[in-house]
Amino acid sequence: MSPDSVPGSENLPFRILPRLVAGQNDFFWTSGSDGLLRLLRCKACGFVLHPPSPRCPMCLSKDLDQQPVSGTGRVYTWTVNHQPWIPGFDPPYVIALVELDDQVGLRLLSNIVGCDPDEVHIGMAVEVTFQRYEERGEVVWIPVFRPSSIDAARDRVGTLQGEHADAANRGFRDADTRALGVKVTPTRGEL
Ligand SMILES: [Zn+2]
Image (cartoon, rainbow, N blue to C red):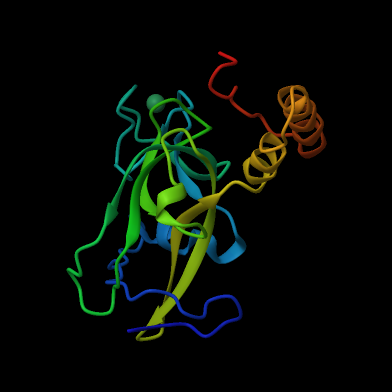
């Protein structure tokens, strides 16, 4: 199996790809084709469930729909794998449980990419991105997470020296999030 050669997909790691089951999990593994992460949402009570299940665990309704979610969240917990378990899937890499902003407790097991493993921390803001693989004519879009572009910019502001750094940081975040129409959870120390 080899990563597809579309621009931006070079040097993707080796992966054992999921088996797609039509009508069950295929929507999840192909959702990234348009850049959106989709999960099942209960049409009766609005609960978002993952992994896919035939019933809503909250109200037991079977009336579920595949709906786009924000794709943004926070690192709930993580570990760095240094063991070369699978030939070609070279360590180190970060395995993380990401809690999406959409709903408390809505978590995906994934990888953190686009930064040094030492930079990953609990509460780190991340956003989804997709890695496209193709095998035997079947295309799979693996959802992985990278540092949030907003949070990375905020961190740069936060490195400013001097007593005005915190105020500048807050101002930047507020202006930035207003412009993008997104919600940012207060950072540690502001709770
Ligand atoms: Zn429900």
